[in-house]
Amino acid sequence: MDYLLVSLIKIAIIAPALLATLAYVVWVERKVIAHVQLRVGPYFVGPHGLLQPIADAIKLLTKEDFIPSGVNHFFYWLAPWLGLMFAVTGIAVIPLGPVVDIFGVKTNLGLADLNIGLLWILGLAGMGVYGIALAGWSSNNKYALLGAMRSAAQMISYELPMALTLAAPLLISNSLNLREIVDTQAGFVFGFVPNWNLFTGFQLLGFVLYMICAFAETNRIPFDLPEAENELVAGFHSEYSSMKFAAFFMAEYCNMLIACSIATTLYLGGWHPLVPAAAAQFVPTLLFGGAAAVLFYHGLNPGRPTDRYSFPVFGVIFAGLALLFLVPGLGPILNHLFWFLGKVAFLMFFFIWVRATLPRFRYDQLMKIAWLFLFPVALMNLVLTAAGVSFFGK
Amino acid sequence: MDLVLFLTFALIAVVCAINMSLQRHPVSSALSLIGVMVSLAVLYVLLGAEFIAAAQLVVYSGAIMVLFLFVIMLLNAGSEKLSFKSGTAQFLGLPLLAILLALASWVITDATAAARPVKFGSFTAGGPREVGWELFTKYLLPFEVTSILILIAIAGAYRLANKEMD
Image (cartoon, rainbow over all chains, first blue to last red; front, side):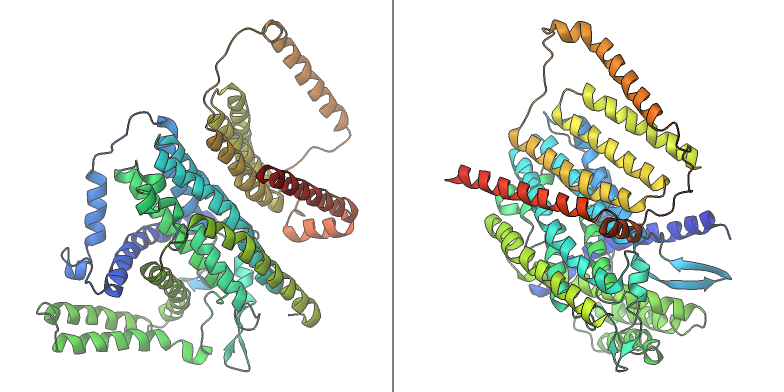
């Protein structure tokens, strides 16, 4: 079939899925943080607050779009959409799965297959600063400007160790194409250790370094200096409301999603399963089946009165998901997606977990970590990996 | 398709370049310059030089221009005001511009007269592998000399910054 048509169909599937994911990541984040802090989180809109993201979207859409006086109108209007555009475009090169056969059409699971995929992501990450910097500058507010300055300085500083860290798995995989990088991580060593860069490439240090840089690049706690709410009101987006504010919000979560996908692709073997393939195809079924069983059990012994009805319903949904993985033809495709998205989801959970537990760094500490710790260690990691690759090959 | 894309992005590049000099505010000028750089990156991709395009995005529009913007914001530079005082600029500006453009176009047409016209898709050796290979074999000496030059610049910047601090 026509390449253009297939691409359009894939975009039509992935774009709404991405938007829905971005909305529900916020729900997950609020729930997880609430449970870490012994609260229940959103609970009133829909069962267990599940319709909260939709309510939030309606609220943001209908809210007054207030423009403060003295702003630079053009840049004030441009900045949030610029940030969102650069964030969303990155999703295009993320490989979600191998080449699959759907109704006789062979296609990649993923939108674009660039042979400079990783550089594309790095370029977009660099461009993403403009959204934040322009927003802070055009708002005509000193807190917003301070947030924007911090963000620009922070992102330039952390891009360096991040690029150096990412160069190490590139040496092992010998390619910039994200799909090829995943392909080199297929298989198992000794029959049970997955051939991921994290394990057989000895990139544990690199993975930790990358995650630290990813936290800084996405402006997340403990590096959320650009929007430190107890110093800068809300930092660069103090003056924004309504959908423009939502655009910043979505851009931040989209950047998080991309950072986690890159970590999965480069270090955690992309869509390749953790356990050998014969067992891997039953893992999703067992996992969702187990979740369904737990939900049924708690539905029969409810902690709160409403759980008697809501838990069994969720249980049925999870049982349906479990059975979906056993459907021939569809099952293997979902299985690839399961492993990729499962790893991304775990890393996203890690991001949220860190946000719920760690305090914020001071600004000078943030810069010191980047230049005096991360940069030399990333350089050392790169040199060691290069030596390893040249001595032992790969 | 290639031609349409080329014309679109060439037009964007030229409009952004003209806009850069017309804008009074430094931030607007910087943004226009970013527009030029991004459309140049697209043109590189159209010509088959993906690696150069990515480098253009990462280095120029991603790092250098962020630094420019950072400095402009830090100094809080305001809009420039036209004084209309320089008579030289008023009377000689346009003729000098015309002479410059004519010279540039003459040099370019003269230098590329013997070369074959560029066709979209005929150049395929623009990937990271090919560029890296060329850099480390054919152009090794210029490459290493450039890196030493940058090292000297870093040392100089360090010295100057240290002097300021004392």
